Amino acid sequence: MTEPLEPLPEPANLRVLRILVTVLTVVMIGGLLTIVALFVIRFSSSPPMVPDSVTLPDGLKAEAFTLGPDWYAVVTEGGKKILIFDRETGVLRQTVEVK
Image (cartoon, rainbow, N blue to C red):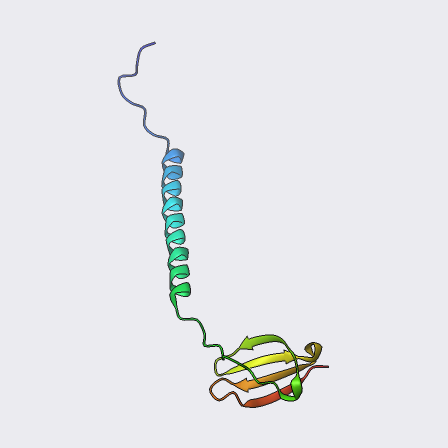
């Protein structure tokens, strides 16, 4: 067999496919870099300030704890009572009865 004198032109579909694969590669690398950057930003921020101790009224036993922007809540009595405290002063703000 003899080699053709002129190289055959690349089919249009192959050129489009090559462009799509290149764009997909760039998007995947960009997405991976974005996820890594978000992890670094999120985990390098300072953790929320948790109170050293919480004094519960009437000798209640804490079962769960959650933080809000300027408050924290303690779930007691088998999940039937939620005590909401001020984060700055530790004063009981509100008691919520869950039925």
